[in-house]
Amino acid sequence: MPDICNPLSSQTDDLLVACSSFITVMGALTNLLSISFYISVLCRAGVAGGPNTTEKLTKWILVLLNSYDIVVCVSLIVYFFLQLNCVGMRDLAVAVFLYAVQCTGFMTCLLAVYRTITILWPHYVIKNNYIAAIIGAFGTFFFALDAAGAAISVHLEVKDRYHEPQSERIIKAIQFIIYVIIFLTIVISNTICVKQLLSGCNIAAWKKQATITMGLLSVNYCVFNIGFVVQSGFVAFKCDMDTVADVCIGEVADKVIMFVLLPLNSACNPVVYLSRDSKMRRFIGGWCGRLCGVSDRSADSSVRSAISRIGDGEGGEEGEGEGGGEDDLRRTGGSSCSTACTNA
Image (cartoon, rainbow, N blue to C red):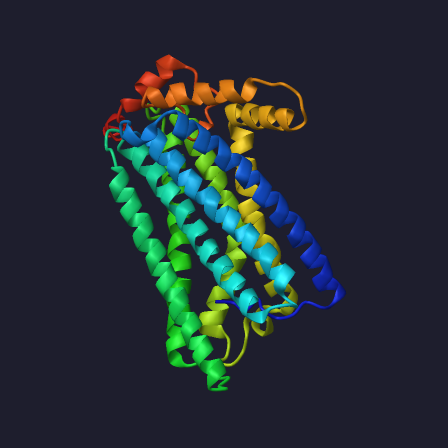
């Protein structure tokens, strides 16, 4: 992994820390508001014993994505606070930060693939247990890779060795390959979805809105993470065995990628949700109104509306359906796009 443990001292670094601190604080708050909306909808709908629908699975995946985004922001805040006080805790914050960044990328990739499946095969239902198993497997795999890399680094520090062994280089290469696969999968999945939308297939209006939202999340991820992928490639293959990333690609570029772009990705995800979901905007507006002492029932009404859509088993996914109230179009959600376009 790229090294972000170098002390920050120059004026440029101070500016980066100030920008990153603002981004992480706002990102943590917006993700907390976003996750509160999805949790309220899911819990009040009693989804634990309900039918297995695309709506519910998507919302649970979004809850996990919000959670990892919060971890990204909070761990970076902890890193800045502890950087001059406790080296051990600072290194732990860095490890948690990088692990959360990996999981955020994987959850975005999972959403993109899941959306593609629902577009191509609308009658196919993926069970909750399968999704949970996939998330657990990849989360464990990422943790094992990071733990192995950390163990090697600790061993080198104890032995006072400064040259990177081949085993650590292999771990970094595997991580880089995973980043590339995630990045390309997101791009390919969204390309397929856009092609289906433009092909004139019979796709429900709410599903079109959901695909657009997923596309915006994917663009957000690709823009803010392309630098991290390139940086990881330099660390894995280009840099000398004893050279850190900031020497290979530039110290300022290295810190901008780690301290600004990665947390900005996590902070911007809730902005996409809010821009696409009128019910979430009403929910958060009502919550802020109550916080300021102003009575507003819009939050409860938006949650009840979202619950009613989940109860239908087809409602506007991810809450982004500005046109999700069109029942006649929703009923066409079960029509197979792949079947409609077979003869095209």
